[in-house]
Image (cartoon, rainbow, N blue to C red; front, top):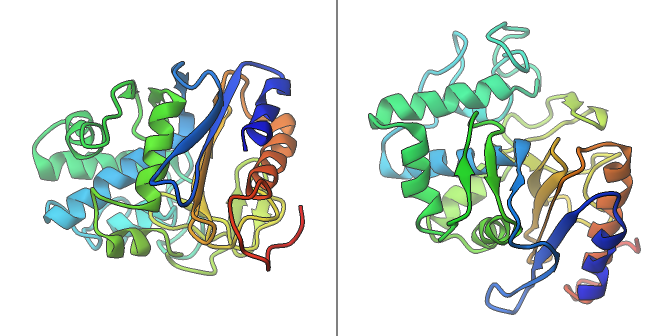
Length: 280
């Protein structure tokens, strides 16, 4: 396992990678600078979404709360199905008809929670997610869609939580990591148009997308997110594995090659006994 993760040492800039391994009580294996803070960019969306999941369980908000463009709800915003443009309040489609990846939609979802809770979103995030998971190095420095900074160790704590939740019920996790408005087509940033382009509530669902930033050996149920700053987190519930990486080189063609290769190497390193997985 450590040998598989060691591939990050050959990447074109400083990076770290780590996996939460199955059958080890949430044990992790890492390579590289696990305690160095990096920008998370859009991996931040997973943090923000989880805070909203907690808020739904607490009754502070509901999935069906009106939010965003007319006819849209909190679910539309989290699932990138509100019709909002990527980075503005422009409406490009009616809610529920297209998968349009929208940073603005996630920001509006966070603002909705902030108003409902009567406290700054950054404080709610800390109380709901960061403090319970002892994510002491992670901070939100800007947009709830892309402004988190933190260490690989903290990101792996998030991955561990997504494998075995304690801050939300398993039923909430299952709902949030299943396709919302399944079958919608759209563009997956960095990888082109996908049909379908399924997403859950704040996380992307791997499905059978190709090309993709996870590996060929990842199950269709794999969910997670990657960021333009050069990092990612995926969770494969079929394998019982979470894999994360952070680094200082922005996403580009190098990552589209390196990340799937790392994913397949990790899954091939004896982490799962599933015999029906395709070879890398």
